[in-house]
Image (cartoon, rainbow, N blue to C red; front, top):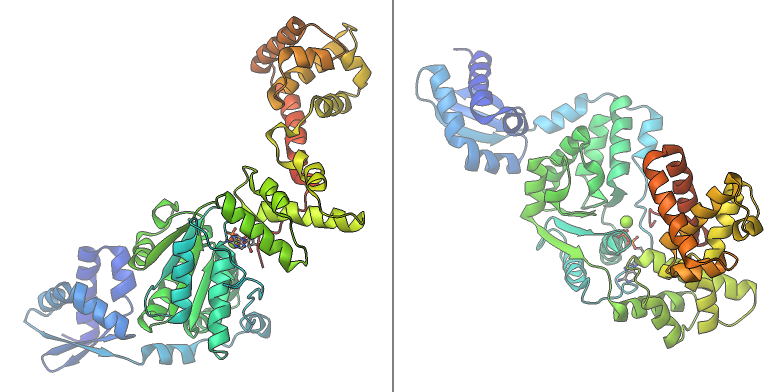
Length: 453
Ligand code: ADP
Ligand code: MG
């Protein structure tokens, strides 16, 4: 039987016995060469070779012998196929090429030195240091996961900065998984897939941030999977971050999940109070401010675990102290940050003015006793929100509403609760008011950048 026909038939058997996905990944790229009674598999690289030898030897041998109707001895060789196929790759338009040559966007301030180590992150920190010490050796891939603002981008960037410090010539690629996905789309559109692959396969260290973004993005996952394999088998370091563990990322292909699990998984937890104090003091020092201990403790005692948000508080305090030319004292911080962080951030006065504004009535009307519906409904909405968003008791709310009896407040709150169930329009009005009140604390602070770079 002619080689091509034999391989075609054997491939059909293999596809059926191994399943579409495994077949496509591991056998589709394989070619066959017949050498007397030897069937030689030509594979793209060593990784493929060992993979096929370990997993698919039996199946391939069987499929070939069945198709040939005789026993064939199986051999394996690494071909120059990739090289050849690369050469055939179409010329990429300039526009697309330009983006393939970006320097690594490593934020220089995210280093190991500027990272504060505590119980919450010590394992992740140690793993990152080990990886930077000996890339590709110990923990490959390294998978860092944790909630927003806990230092994932900082740490993965620190790995890159450290490697570059030690080996200035190293080719490091840092990027978000979202960026990877966009770049891939561009590459496909401009016929630049081969270039894209080449670029990623040439790096010494791939740092991919926020990999959870790949959830459900099959094409990017597939491309990343191949890149991963190529880098991994070449002993190149791969570090990824995610807001979830691999098995919790919805729509992450099993084969990628397995690869992440081959390496080391480390997590980042929200910092405890001591660590928060140390982080705040370090961040303040970076900006030339010596943050008093009680001030740092006040901030660290806030329930907020997201370091980015804590940093935002600090930024605001520093900005105000410099605009107003005043010292950063505990009083200043309490005044500036207190309303942003405490649970009781929303005051009854806030509620009164927000509701008055929304319904176009006066605060005095809400506090007054006029019973017409145009003021009684907003008044009761305000009572309801005051009860919901502040810790004030019914009598306290009554007092703030122009000295009303607590039973009036109870009645008002009850009425709104009932109305909300049957009146979607009112429910929406209340939601809008509530959102305006609770989001205020985020609006006054600087909106911290999500990218971290
Ligand atoms: P993530 O990527 O996990 O959302 P980032 O790495 O962007 O979080 O961190 C948010 C901010 O918090 C950054 O400015 C970072 O420097 C800072 N940060 C987080 N954890 C620490 C830490 N342990 N020490 C110093 N800074 C930290
Ligand atoms: Mg990040």
